[in-house]
Image 1 (cartoon, one colour):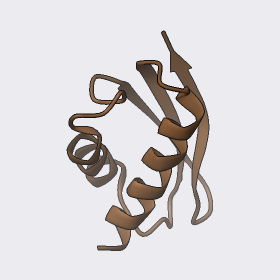
Image 2 (cartoon, helix red, strand yellow):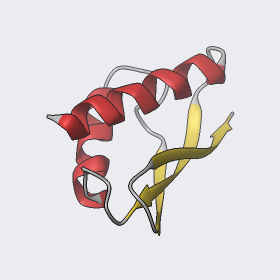
Image 3 (cartoon, rainbow, N blue to C red):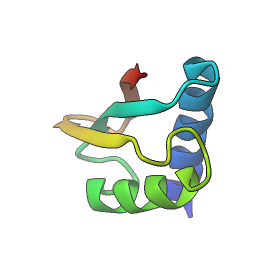
Amino acid sequence: MHGLKLVADVLREVLARCEGRRVEAVRLKVGENCHARPHDIEYLFREAARGTKAEAARLEIDSTSGEELVLESIRVE
């Protein structure tokens, strides 16, 4: 459930920053000790983004040390 909260927070930030434009790509940095694994994050992001401007976005996930999930960049149309 913690992973869902993390992803929901990231998606909320993505949609706020996209200013109504369609999101093409989202790049995240995921710490090796993050409470959610990259595979889970991708699944949760797809589910949470359904019906939003980020629905078709390509999700790029880079692993890093630490515990954080960081929104690295967003690409919009």
